[in-house]
Image (cartoon, rainbow, N blue to C red; front, side, top):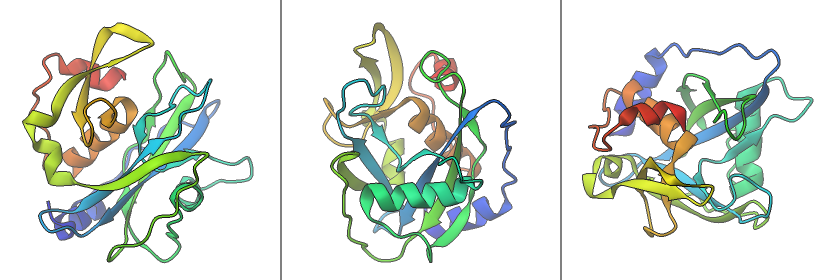
Length: 207
């Protein structure tokens, strides 16, 4: 999954922009760099904070739009700079994915936009410890490694199994939920979709 192919596919994609009236808006950045085997994606482990429903989760840099912001792309770049110290002002903009809704049980009014950027080389990261515990680059090709595909359990819903992908320590670094939905959509757009190994994949759309 080389960057040139991703660039071409995203440029041709016409994103579905959902209705925003009455919704809380957030945006995330898919920050990509060239890797030895495939393009690599920046993933973050959110800081652990009491009362935060996303505490400790694996995620993409991002957050809610500020009241004065009208551009989700600008918000994604701002949040990325604040959280990991990467300046996307002059980064290559690759495109936008379809907007998606948050989990109705956790954030029923949330609408998330995802924007993809390319940064050359190995840019240094500067983490805000209030927001981010760790951050690392992960090869997109490894998302297809079936040994990484797991059924993930969260403390709030111990009887429910969610599709997940281990991207680091199995007890700590699992991509699931909204982030996995966004990556699932990215792989569909770039014509490299997942082979469904999670059983009931209808849950993909509801987490």
